[in-house]
Amino acid sequence: MAENSNTKVGRSAPQPPNLGDSRWGILYCPKTGLTSSRKRWDKIGAVLDARKVQYDMVQSENSESVERLVKMMISNGYKTIIVVGGDSALNDAVNCLMMEEKSVRDEIALGVIPNGVMNDFARFWDFDEDKVEQTIDWLLQRRLRKVDLGCIRYTNAKGEKCHRYFLNCVNIGMTADIMNLRRQTRRLFGSRTLSFITSLFVMLFHRMEYKMKLKINNDVIDRKVMTVCIGSGPGYGQTPNAVPYNGMLDVSVVYHPEMVQLIEGLWLLITGRFLNHRSVHPYRTTEVKVDYAKKAMVGIDGRLMKTPVGDFRIDVEQEVISFLIPV
Image (cartoon, rainbow, N blue to C red; front, side, top):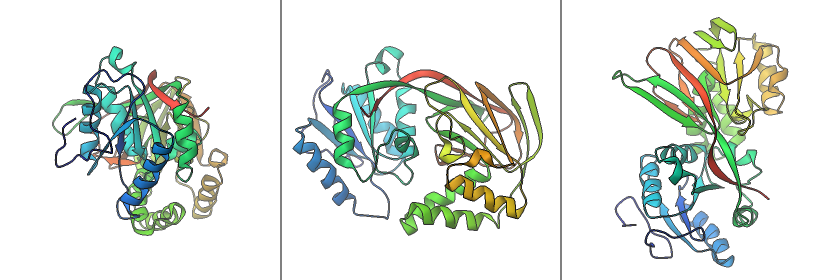
């Protein structure tokens, strides 16, 4: 693995292809503007060394470099790829893996050491950002589970047919706005809760409804909608019953509540009872068709994407990634 301006090699020299299962390729995605990235890696590296883990580390300088570095690891023969990062970094990694042939992909185990602005997919499996020793001990047990990926299929501004995979969820409407603001405010405030509350406060002064037409199972929704969450995973609390291994998508469609109901809904979201709100309409399906969602932003695993042009659809591919899970 050659070093260049966007790559930092860890304590060991890169290895040739055919490394087997024992040596880890670690992609370190440092947080921006919160803590010392060197200090965080030193802590993780010390635990790896204490466990005598054989590994090579490369550091991403920005989100654009993640897919390139994962490709580099795959071509160099790593069979265990560990992402030290959050939901967006994992999203980049799985999309890179999905570019490979199934025979190549099936030989690779993907794992995570949470280190992101948002770590919801890692939290689903009980990986804790503050428990590095426990996380690495679990990863060393090499317990694998095949997980599902959701997929959004759309047309871009150039008229090209595109698709993007996700581990956690796709948000359409107000929550995509909130997730975008949340990432920005987390970098400013550091606190996950404070950034979320600040984002919600700012959103009170933003557009709250979007004209949408959705097809879910046999239902057609053609009206103003505040937000839609389509989750293969827990969807940042909006699809709390979704699991990434049943071949299904959970969908929460939220109509515009009154202000008192909105405050109640935010409380239910924070306390994990989001589906109990009267304005939330839950579904379980294998496909969602969006005929239009006028001027609504779309977010994938917490990262804002450019609004698709015209209609788009979201489906699920079952058991396509081998993920390292706790014992």
